[in-house]
Length: 282
Image (cartoon, rainbow, N blue to C red; front, side, top):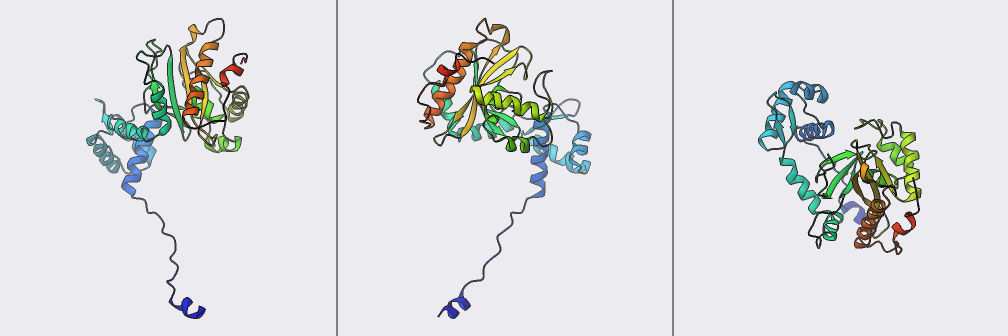
């Protein structure tokens, strides 16, 4: 009987290997390169960066321009176009943490006193998925879909601090990349030291790492299982920190992170984390 079953059984098939479509891969690589560069790039630069024939890159760019995913400057250089915002909005609409963040502010008619941002980790970047902008000018407009290096931003460091050091090293195996000001960690060891301090005190600090004159406090957001799934930050003008070194802004960041974590089902944080942090100092 067993021999009969063996002889009539269907042969085991090898697992299918997902085949990538070359043209799509090239287009997405081109978009990713422009998104990370954050400045216009010429056709020659893109051709060199992607190691593709100029005619191929020219065709990719024209196609992406026609769909609105790229825009061409008068000098011929290319930038990310407005078409990507629809993709960003569709992505954000499916993220529970962004929906819950927006729900927190649903009953508030006026803008918050200071800018509050929510981000998730995307590779080495903090990807902003929700923003509540303050009426106060910061010199930096935070928008949904914006990317900033996670090792510089307040919300990014709040998330990185809860990754195992080995994973942080893996993410930044190629180095920490560009800096936006003269401040911020330059080497992985300096970053790991800062992340250890951030994890110990419960909040992160961006002291003019993203923009001169801009200061932020960040805090991690946890899901029902206790994992860190996002980061929030309260961003302020450094000149307005005051004699208390921004204590109320630090408490505000912790309060938002706490409330959002509770909305996501994190019941372990029964005590307000801001209470224990008010006496903490950098």
